[in-house]
Amino acid sequence: MKASITIVTALLFSIAFAQPGSYDGDRLTDAIGKSSGGPEVAGLETTYHCEMTNPAYYSSITDGMELIMKDGALNEIRLYKNSLVYGTFKDNLPKALRFGMSSGEVKALLGKPTVNYSSTGYMEFQIKGTLFACGFEGGKLSELTLSKSM
Image 1 (cartoon, rainbow, N blue to C red):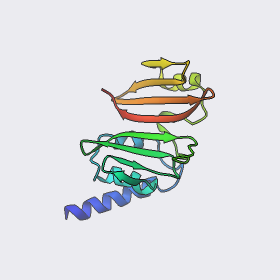
Image 2 (tube, helix red, strand yellow):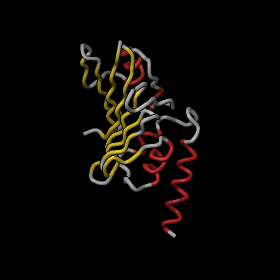
Image 3 (cartoon, rainbow, N blue to C red):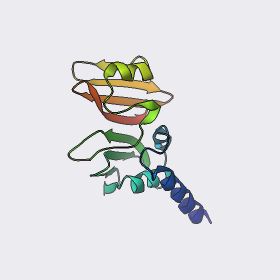
Image 4 (cartoon, one colour):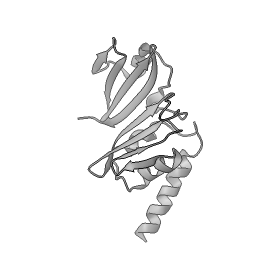
């Protein structure tokens, strides 16, 4: 019974992520901290074609995503605008962020950064228990890492 509930939940989660750009990007943050064998993480692995390199690391070579596990749970989600190694993440980002935004636009959405290295193009924001680490290339948002705040 429990196995069938897990399968159905994973299927529903996969359907929710199935259409690029069709879901609320904030749902990505909901998966952080969830069990690596749970439906939320399985949905990400399936939808974004993530392959396991080792039990703590999954990545996609086409859909711009890396999943980093720690202690059996999803610890980090790394998203890329356009990576030669990981591909391009084309779905919605959390908090109405969009790849290609300037640092000023990101600050307008997320508030004052807790860490700001403008010379290297890196900022961090703490929002409701989630760390948003933003990487900029050419002044535009090109990478986003989501993890639990410490």
